[in-house]
Image (cartoon, rainbow, N blue to C red; front, side):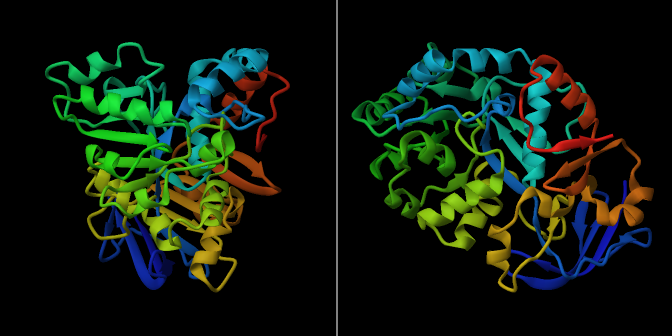
Amino acid sequence: MTDWFFPGLHTLPHEVARDVSIHSGTFQSEPSNEAVLLDLQDALAFPGLINSHDHLDFNLFPSLGGTKFTNYLEWSRYIHQVHRDTIAEVLRIPHPIRVIWGVYKNLLGGVTTAVHHGPDLSFAVEPPIQIEQHGRNAIHSVEMEKWWMFKLTRPFSSRSPFVVHLAEGTDCRSGAEAMRLFRWNRLKRRLIAVHGIALTVSDMRHLEGLVWCPDSNQFLYGAGPDKALFECEIPVVFGTDSTLSSSWNLFDHLRMARQLDIVSPQRLFDMLTTCPAKLWRWPRKGQITPGFDGDLVIAERSQSDPWVSFFQLNPENMLLILHKGKMCLFDESLLTKLKPQMTEPFSKVKINRRVKFLKGDVDMVRSAIMHAHSSLHLPFEVER
């Protein structure tokens, strides 16, 4: 495993110029003698981001909507009637291929840990980032999962939280389903709600956390959780959902959140780093701190104000992404320095005329996608 030393790196959240060292996959206070030195002092660095809600196998769909809905049941009925053929075309793509594409979507947004909502997935090869799953404790929703109450009340359940789409809509029905879930939670399971548009402040006391997906919420419903929910003691973390209802680019989601002006830039950043690390009980994630996992993103800095630079980022601005000290992505400008560290296969891709190298066989993934759905537009090209 490669050790790293970055002198004078400007790191968020406090924009402090400091030396950053990674040894054996964790941040350290001092560099090792074998560390690869990279001088990227003009760049912006931050801990690998945590996406607290995605459906990894649903990220080759276009966003399907066209109007505003009152709840997720209305939306589901609409897309299966109006977009039936589009859905069938995407579902012809092999499931493992759709899953790994979802992984790459997250990686290109600076995500080094993504939480998948749905049945547990298996991977033919180790994904380049960490994928967390709550398969047995993942409840799709109160209305769309028939036996959810038996999941919630079964004995000897794991200690993992139960994660559920909840109060996803603007009507009374959406709010009522939350109370139904809470009444069934007789064993006081840990509950983490996703979306929560119709939740009230009093509902929050039944939850351990809330996952906010602003881009998806605004696209489907033109609304999000009440601002008062963000002022509760219950933690709120950030999720993207899938491209069925949102952009593939994480930074589009963040810019949407900034436009809503619900939380400060610092708080929004915390929702992707320290806050989810605490909520999901990952004590070694979310900070560039000695002893923590060496998850690091280094990106181009476009402005003197670090927050302005951060919220202007796009996938083409990523310079280097490490997960536990292992290279996942790097920019072509670093190829000469990093080529000796390419001990595993990397693929060359082009995003908005910028060349990146991604860990894994992205060309095989692209070929499998195009074989099943030749007319599908992909957000980046694979260079051969």
